[in-house]
Amino acid sequence: MKRNIIFLFTVLLGLSWYSAISEAVNNPKKVKEHLEKAAKLEKKEIYVDAIEEYEQALEYVQEDAAIQLRIAKAYLNSGNTKKFTSICEETAETYQEHTDAMDLLMEYYVENDSESRAAKYLENFTEDYPDNKNAAKWFTKLKGTYTELYCRYDEMSGIVNDSMVVLEDELYGIADASGQEIIASEYKDLHPFSEDGFALAQKPDGTYIYLDKDGQIRKAPDAGYENLGMFSSKSTVACKDGKYGYLDEDMKPAGKFSWDELTGFQNNAGAGKRDGKWVLVNRKGQIKDKKEAKEYDDVVMDENGFCSGQKRIFVKEGDIYYLVNAKGKQIGELTFDGAKAFTGDGYAAVCKDGKWGYVDVDGELVIDYAYEDAQSFQNGYAAVCIDDLWGYIDEKGELVIDAQFVTATKFSSSGTAAVQEEVNGEENWKLIQLNIFS
Image 1 (cartoon, one colour):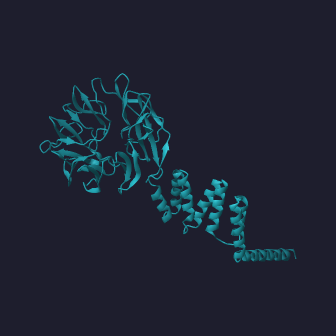
Image 2 (tube, rainbow, N blue to C red):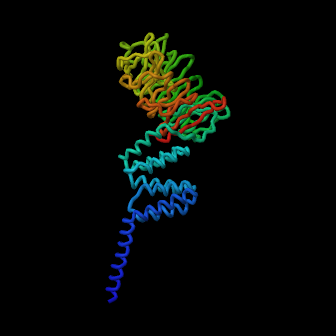
Image 3 (cartoon, rainbow, N blue to C red):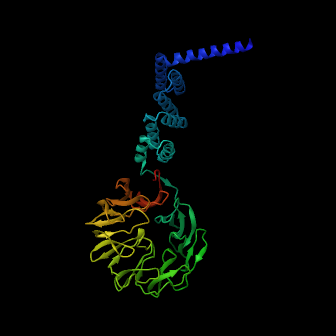
């Protein structure tokens, strides 16, 4: 008997719920009433009651993204931004065919200078929904937006191997790509860390040393060497008695010191100058393929003294520059009026008739000559000069950061770059972090 009563109670309860749900789902009049009440309350800025009316309207419809967004907007107007963003996020994920929720959320972030939060949400969203076209659209819109990181330094170099030289109180130190101190500012001169993990430093007494990332001295050349370079490929360039050569990893001469100028050795190539002409050299500073070695009027070096990024070297004969590989073989048929060395990845900047464009490692023009000046690509972006100011382009040649900087350096592998901006007549250094970096 007891079981029959429980069963009957369950059946009646189920029927009552079914009746309520049926009435709710099939009662558009009730929905309209609650929406109208909510709208009137919102006009009076009575948002708490308006939200309640919207939620009651939702009881009469199974799914309705539009009502969800009205609730989100009411929360925003009431000042509850946390609830606003959470509803927008949930609605964007539940109703992917409708773009309004994501658009509303992204527009809110952009209007409130929170592009970094927008980028973070998009990254998480696309992990779960990689084919969402609206998310891809917003990724494109946010590309080039950036956040300024805290920075206390008087000057900053470009970021090399995720390290940069910084100036503080007239002495140099090293910070990482996010601006955090690695080496304290206590040196007369300093260079970023090389791929080998050593940074060239000059102590206040003029002595040269190489530091590791713990600030410990790891290499110390004998007295008499000067104009040392970045340590790479287990060697470094140095000058003694007015002539240049290479030191090996033990800081001993790898060969004769006989060059008037010498590049660093990298990617199995270096270049030396003697009697006004340049030739390619090996790690001992000897001429490569001496019988067939070609002489050049100039060799293009980067800011760290290397010429052979991506095993490509720009050389000059007469008034023209062209591209060769590490063995001196010409790459491509194009010639240029000027060039910037390749970095570890990306296109190189080249000049023709006063304008700068870009070539790939095959010597093919990939971005047309259009800029007053340009830097080679690194990590997917390159600085270009437009109307005497610097901005950034991507590898499609699209301007992603407007030309606004007095100085712009290359981006690090984590999407940071040191830039210099003029504000009220003063030129200040800043460290920027791309919100979208891919």
